[in-house]
Length: 407
Image (cartoon, rainbow, N blue to C red; front, side, top):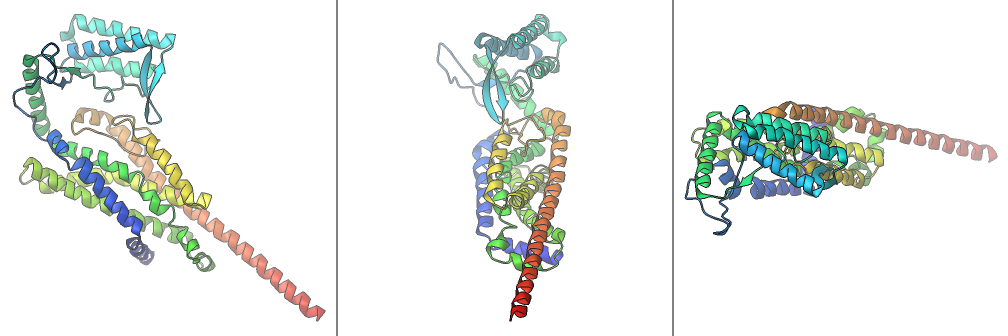
């Protein structure tokens, strides 16, 4: 089987689509992760003089996240009030933002949340940010889930309207950055950011290679020869699955090492190249490779099930669109991609770590199961051809015998 894997890897190197895949992966890396915007988000916050981006009558010095229970409760109450006044709330459905009309029960739920927030606003020093977020968590559940009240989805940020507030916000942001560095979360946050962007090509382009992998022999008229030999379906199909999976995985693993090295260089983290490479490799292996291998297996299984490569490609595109949003949170088993579009929020990441681990474990198992299903379908098709061939030979012998007797 090792020789078959080696042969398939050499075949992959001859594929034009494989090199297009490399170009696309590099394109996403250089245009999404390795950009000045990313380095600005990963680096220390700017400490210059705050600038008014609004007008003299309506100054605006940027946006800030709530730093205490009072700010969060006040902003959350405001947004709930907007939903009550409009009679709608925003939800993610199949990866898209949709405005849902509120019924009477849901309006009552929102009103109850406002009453709870009013209690906090009367004496906010008794409460923590987590106490306020628990109200939004409960509200999200009561509204059916996947709403903007889900923790990590809606950020409840609000505008900074005075110079003094802007100076204070800068100090808070700098303190948060220092806390992140001291907690050792700078490089892991960067690695999660890297995986978030690279998950986009990982979730769709492998199927363009795998969907035609088992059909290639039919198009080159080699299927009859292969079917005629007693080749194990497991060795035949899994050699192709492993070879393509390894080749595609190597592309992302190499990019992860490059990403870790570049991050260290840009941020001036002297002596941390090895640590960065290990962290980026770990996140890439755990977050991206299950997506890649599941996509490869899905293409192979779909091509055997429908006997057409275009069908699994179309289905994969739909699956990809469903999985792209939201950018954070919602890691159900239907999500092919892991989206965590933030280099910060490591507290939220820890809260979702178990959900992410379940998702990734599921897709590893699914990849093997789909590859096994492809092998079973391939063997079944070969058995049908063998039966058809045997019947054809039997009929030919009968015709020859009849013709001989007639002569």
